[in-house]
Length: 496
Image (cartoon, rainbow, N blue to C red; front, side, top):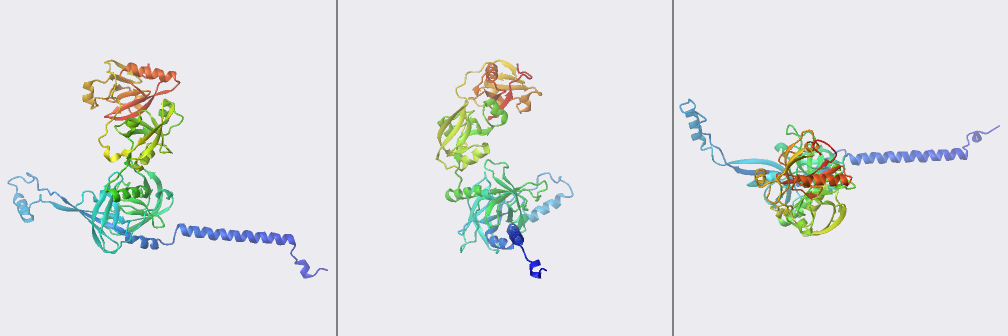
């Protein structure tokens, strides 16, 4: 006969199993608590504390511009018309209509230092005769322009206050991830201080500028938000609201903010110099596509292909059209956009190492960068010692070609230094037509060799075939702008 204590006894095996279940349950409970905390941190119940913290540094910007008025055009009311006396009395009562009048515009901005530096968009204040800055507490101050950068659409203003001003700081925009929460603040449609929330929809967007690095967001951005800040959840500025994509003019959830890492560099230069000072290499470039890489015998489609060398640092160092820049100042070059930004971010006067691929070999050059803003009048340095062209005409690769003459230069607006073949006609079924070559274009190189006659081009095609290449690289100029085009050398229309 067994006692009750003996029948309810827990064996050691059962005890161990029970302990493991208890440990597992505790761990699961801990993970649930952590997940709830993470969700709470990622999506706070309210953004009011953040908005209250940053609002004092956000400003509304009002600009005033004097514009010329217009008088009623002569003949708008025929003489003898019953309305003639009416319009005469209207003009006498309201005075001349051609006197200057005031035009007002609205935008946004934010204070970045306690001594009154304010960041906004260049297009918000461009051409303004008077700029007023309104703070969250209703206080207004006059602002002066310290400097502007149309390339990134950034302007730096300065206001003078009686006391230290509330300000916000730039955050590292490179840490912003797609899906992160962001808060936009500004003066949409003149409605006054307003906040909208969304996420980072995309990174590294480019619109039209050489130095574009936009954060795309679905936070509501409308007219009047221009120049306002885009905040992360820590209250740091990760972007400056600049543009929207919209068929109606209102927000449809596609807004663009210039990344703070671009803006902060511009602001530092405007504060120190009143202008931007970007590095300049002195080349025109294009991306290396798959067909271009094959035509040049490159291992991969990467780097920046030089289409023109201008008078400046690159020419002095010995770079040539057709070189592919694969490394700049120790950083591998992925494409033209990356190179443009890296060169622009470099210090003027800095000596950098530039590695290029030329004729299947790697070459290294040391180049002292100039200032881009001083290079507006730079002209191409190539094509100076060409042979005199012949007058022959021929059809090659689907194109009817003729050697360039002085008369053609005048008609096409081509410089006296340029030699090559003028495209007179393109077969609509040819690859040349498909890749955008058209009549009036000038081919100056084939296989990275100068061409001044149809025979030169045909020789280049034969050389490409003998080298086992499927295509040949042509340097094509249109209106002075060069680009490389790779065309197949296999038999096709006019390829014989």
